[in-house]
Each structure stands twice: as C-alpha cells, then as structure tokens.
Image (cartoon, rainbow, N blue to C red; front, side, top):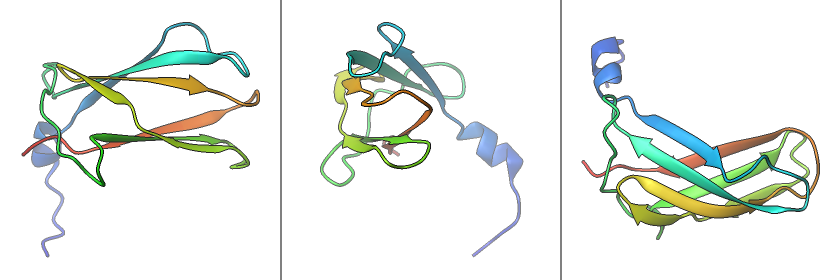
Amino acid sequence: MDHNDSSKEKQQGALQTDWKFEQYPQTNTTNQLTITIKDNKGKPISEFEVNHEKKMHLIVASKDLSKYQHIHPTYKGNGVFTVPVTFPQSGSFQLIADFVPKG
C-alpha cells in the first residue's frame, strides 16, 4: 500500500456538499433537510452506488451521543437528497452523510 501524500489526487476527488434546512431547526419539530452533492467544480453528481441497500445513510447524533438516528434520505436526482429530520432535544448535533458516487 502506498502511503505517499498525493494532495493533487485528493483535490481532484474532492466533493462539495450543500446542507439546507427548510427552516431553522426547532426541538421536536420535523424539518425537511436537502443535501446536494457536487463535484470539485460545483457540478451536481448524478449517479451513486447503492451501499448497504441505500444510496445514502444519514447519521444524526447529539453531542453527548444520548440521541442517535440512522435515516435514509430519498434521492431526487441531479445530486439532491431530501429527508425529514426531527431533533428530539435542544443542543448540538452532528450530521454525517455516508454515500458513494459512481466510479
């Protein structure tokens, strides 16, 4: 395995993700989240591999890890995924999207 740092390769493979809620998240209120996946030039990525039976897995975890959700956004095409999210308590949450672009 080659462990040389290849920054040029990493930049070419870099992706952009845009995260947008329909409105500012409130405790115990369902809010639509839109995640848009783009290549390093800002062009939407349109094809994704199915990984563990889904195109995307979204993990939502509270800072203290007492609240945890594993949800599956719906792919709308043109790099856009949507999913309703409800935060069961106030405070900080980490959102992690797991996906694999084709190729």
